[in-house]
Image (cartoon, each protein chain N blue to C red):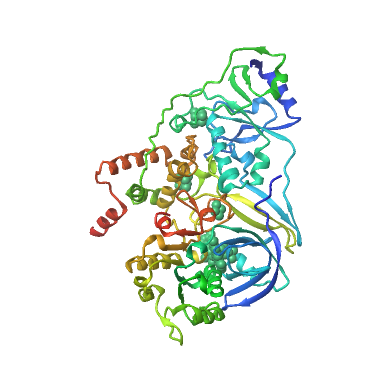
Length: 263
Length: 357
Ligand SMILES: Cc1cc2nc3c(=O)[nH]c(=O)nc-3n(C[C@H](O)[C@H](O)[C@H](O)COP(=O)(O)OP(=O)(O)OC[C@H]3O[C@@H](n4cnc5c(N)ncnc54)[C@H](O)[C@@H]3O)c2cc1C
Ligand code: SF4
Ligand code: SF4
Ligand code: FES
């Protein structure tokens, strides 16, 4: 009998870190080998299942940063350290870290979109010599919605960072959407670079256009798609766009492919 | 080897087969049809050859036999889960060529896509053998010939109902003994070679053309016609999409199950994400998605064949009388126009004239 891909397994929650009122990071015990950009199908038996990106990973754990929006996520917010959460995965492809090495990297993320790129940023934070430079633009709606405050502070020390809030004015943060800050990236001065854009659908669309306007070559842009997913393994059909299954060939796509995917 | 057997004898043979097999065929459910005084014909287990409805097309496809509308994946108790079980018996399905070919599309999704097998599908699929039901001349809505799914050799037995007798071709050695005492005849099943309905599949060979197709005004006409009920997918032999759903059995919520429930890309919430954002918001956009999936991008991905097998059930089931074959032909005409550089109305043009009014 082949392995049952739909069957989740229990894992222990070892820590819960509130990021904002409705976004918590759950540290889960597992020795699963995970690559930056991958996701798990996370569930609570009798409640439901949903895809959640890995926001950070260590020796024997991974972190899931979850926004409380519905049936499953509401219930996850009632869990305590020591409780079990069910997962299957990891699924999906990943950011091509090897390709990013020895070049300049620009990461543009909005809101919960920071979660899927967090492990990528952490990797280059730990290994700063593996990259020429890293520019990180992170945008949040307002002060209440800022995620990963500790990480953001650390990233400032090694990366060129631009943090921005849509409206609020607070110290250390610019005002405006991430797209308004893209022109500050010195693309002209890079001989070789990559750009990663992750966030809400509309934000990725306009951020990519803004990059193109600033002379970025489209092969250098990478995005991560979110789609409704019920299986994560190419069976349920929810994530399909054209001939592509986001759960299989994605969620990370090069823009040359992504721009041709017509929903 | 082929035989001529009486209906009575065939019944005995079926009885003998029932020791090892569950036997499914299109069955009449009287007065259960969509309109008053009409019958419903759908797949069910049979006990007699007389249950088999062979001279009408079934309203539902045989996919439900191995891909049920709703199916328990596993059961939860307090902190463990148990995989659902299936019957040990093997399965025999009376099916037409288009449906047998349709199962190959389901196999592709459930057993091959992504390089992993779905065990819920596999464990039933492995048990299945087909009894091909010959089609006389097909029905008005059939277009299997255009889709190349009018023929198959994937069957163990093939049958032609012929008055009080049944002609049977036995292709599978397992069943030879059952027919040892029967009268041998010359019989190989005939396949329909022409349908009243024909479709032309548009050749889409560039991204530019695809983009133009996305913007065709024709899709908009479905916004008001299609009610997004998903009936077309429910009856389609090749539609495979599902939701998963957890339910609890009891007040105290200690025991429950995770179910898989068939769904349709025609439903409004098929792509709805957290926050209510969805990617295909109008019925027209969903119609476009389904159409291109069935006659373009499935083939682009898996190479061998188009997804649609031309069984024509979708148009028979549609409460708004939307014909899929006409949709394909309409698209073909539009694509021909686009290729010739003739002006074809796009969404933008349509909406700008709207505004200009
Ligand atoms: C690859 C990938 C990675 C992801 N990573 C993360 C992550 O790291 N963190 C995170 O928080 N989220 C992530 N998500 C999103 C997450 O999967 C969804 O938010 C998920 O819906 C939450 O499940 P739920 O059961 O709590 O919400 P649901 O009960 O499914 O509801 C979520 C929201 O969806 C809408 N909705 C759902 N069903 C319908 C419907 N039928 N009609 C209308 N609206 C509906 C509602 O607005 C509702 O508020 C990711 C998604 C993908 C595809
Ligand atoms: S499409 Fe019609 S004629 Fe063709 S195999 Fe199916 S039922 Fe028979
Ligand atoms: S059956 Fe007809 S009305 Fe219903 S979703 Fe399909 S095309 Fe639309
Ligand atoms: S999530 Fe089910 S097919 Fe991709």
